[in-house]
Image (cartoon, rainbow, N blue to C red; front, side):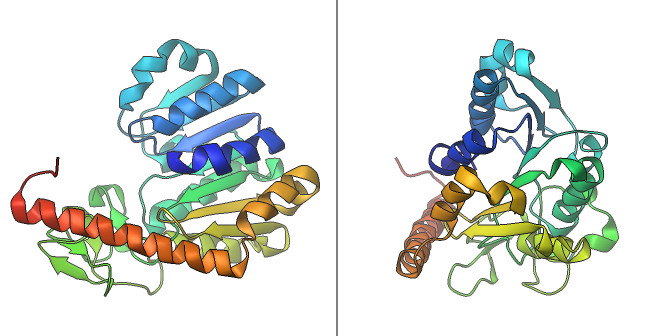
Length: 266
């Protein structure tokens, strides 16, 4: 999600001025650094949730202690009792986790009208579950999966021995109920009847950026900015999809090269 920070996420946050930002899924901490710097500038707080400590957290330890709290836990546990008005969700990419993250967020913060950014709302996990650790998800919500097969860009099927994200627990099934990140978002919007009070936006690049935002926040300058970013003209939107497709082809070629040669290109 850090690739969206400079041109999309940060400008929006500057306009809506959140008081507490919660990052779910920090990876190496690239976006954590961005969040901490913004919180220091605007006097906000932040919470970072991840089962593993981000590698870059030690490099900003003093600043982070000033504005933030780290939760080394699964998101659906850490979110209980956690208050915030802006959330960046980029954790475990499966229906159960995303749906229950949203449930926990709204249980604790519904009156704050939380603004929520999502990563991976497009290919390959919009309609397919990924389990970083299947044992973290109740068995009844774990679809049959394979770890020896990657995702083929052309067919969107699992191919043994190569493809995108080979080695991860990718659900065999594509589509269907309770399967994928975007499906979880859509199901949650329906369950809470949010369509009257919230608007969902999406950009189909870099695996997809989603934004769920209360309609009151779309008034004024913040709304103008968000509309200009996400209401892309049709021709430019179609070009964006083409560019994303070409980027994914390069990714798949890279993955295939590594599998065949067992070495990383120099």
